[in-house]
Length: 355
Image 1 (tube, rainbow, N blue to C red):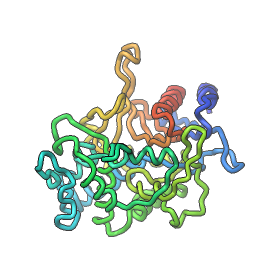
Image 2: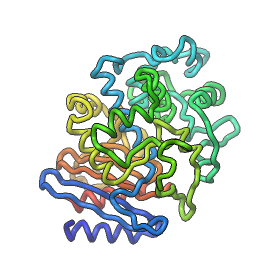
Image 3: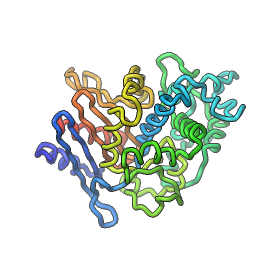
């Protein structure tokens, strides 16, 4: 590890908001690997193989599996999603001014957050509360895919007509649907699909879809942290499934993000397809088709061009990104829900030290 990177990790670790930190990175152009860790859990220091929740970085795994199914012609990006459910099952999921647009939603709309569907996770329900508020308070409850579908149908309003020009709205409901589609097409659970299609081929020994009472229940995971508070919400995390339930490590994440861009999991030609168009979701993030772009505006970089950073982050503080221009890959977590900007600040400092 370079002295520059070591100094960066020391500065990052000094941030009082960070209790646990894990970073693994690689500058492939310079054939150099980097790692940095701080904190401990249950008496063990955090290291490259310490498991943590990826949260929404899980969505990259979903994207990889969907592209595999596209390549095998088991579905297409323009396939209407209603084709993968029993007739009428999704009726009235997306209604605007009395018109049901559900049948117009495609696989690509879900991946790109252009469906306009309400977001079960952060959007306000009829009582003014959000699902996220309960999570952050540590409220644990079980829920199913069917519960989410019913919630969205009966208590939430969609934002726009599917595929409306230049519009995107980040909705975890989209990835709940994609998880169900993966299950319906492959005939196995989302957890089994991730294992068979990603973990086993890549040799990821410390990556799995979290399930309360599941086969990995005895494994120790760094707990989610909101400020100084540890959250114990196994039932809620199980319910998030394809939109946020994967557990991984900094080491496994690095293997995954490299494979994602290298054409190992699906043909490399699809990278151009999923990054061809970016839409704003929330500053300074934009979304492609199943993948996120972090790009600061020129005024924040003193009008100096900065390389694009592409991948995905999670509300847990996790990040899986690549800087393709410089062949840099990074995986890790700051393990903190209280600050949405924290993982990006950590990632930017680490990447700058890896260049």
